[in-house]
Length: 139
Image (cartoon, rainbow, N blue to C red; front, side, top):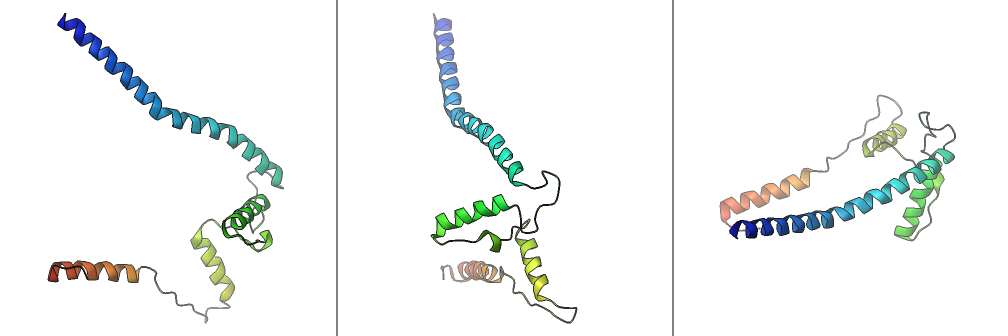
C-alpha cells in the first residue's frame, strides 16, 4: 500500500513538473516560432534593398533600408521628422566617434582633447565609500 502511494505521488509530481516546464517553455517556443517566420521575411527584404547582395560593401552611410527604418523609429519615438540622408550607420560608437574626429583633424599639428566620461562616476563612488567608512553616514 505504501509503495503504491509513493508511486502515485511520484507520478503526480512528474506530471506537475512536465506541466510547469511546458508552461515555462511555451513563451520561448512561441518566440522561436515568431522569429523563424520573421527572419526569412527580413532577409528577403534586406536582399531586395541591397544593391550588391550579401558579402559586398554597402553604401558608406549604411544600407538605405536600414537607414529608413532608423528614421521611422526616430519619428515614432521623438515625434520629429528625420532625413535618411543625414543618418550615418557605423559598426559602433567608437567607429562613429573616430569618423567624426577624423573629419575635424586636418594634419598632425591638430589635436583634440576629450574628457573621460567616467571621472565623475568614480569620484562619486569614492566619496560615498570614504564617507561611509570614516563618518558612518551617507553624504
